[in-house]
Length: 116
Length: 111
Image 1 (tube, helix red, strand yellow):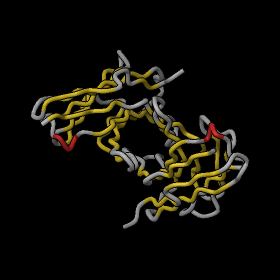
Image 2 (cartoon, rainbow over the protein chains, first blue to last red; image 1 turned 60 degrees about the vertical axis):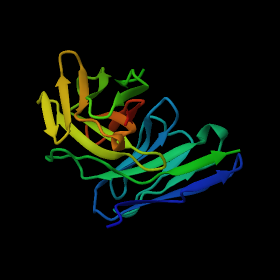
Image 3 (cartoon, rainbow over the protein chains, first blue to last red; image 1 turned 90 degrees about the vertical axis):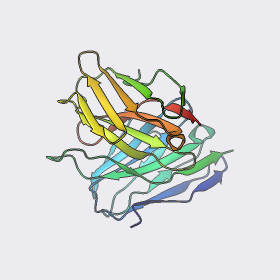
């Protein structure tokens, strides 16, 4: 049972380059999200999706794009990488909360991105 | 402004003793509170949660207490074990499944 799989685990980009961080889940979860973790700031929500074809912005969306064409996949695109995007990125998935208790999120292992 | 705050960046506890991690929040619309544990180079893993309509939830060595009037929750680990050494994140759930995280507390359990 793979859970939430993120690729790559590590990436170094030059300023201005673009790339896509991949996220896939095999639990048939409706809800998927991307967070970034920075020292002293916890995890901050970048974008999220409540189902295929539906995405919305989180707390820190600038410089990132997402799409959700299938239930399983939720890629995060960096359009033009900047040093401020150096961070650890986590993808998470969960069941939709409608009517359900305790919809804890399951996280991937993270992607450590450095922009030079 | 941070809606979820963990004011202690780190905590050191002797093995076998109680660890108490604290969390404060400002948004009274949060309906669930969760604690996540994170080891280095791994993603956060869910530990325990509590609904906003309850004041206590237990799961083995872990108990979470919620004081709604004070907008404060705490995680108690009894007894603490060296394997509990990790970063602990408090999180609060907004409408839908959006999670708002605190900055985390590093717990070190000394043997």
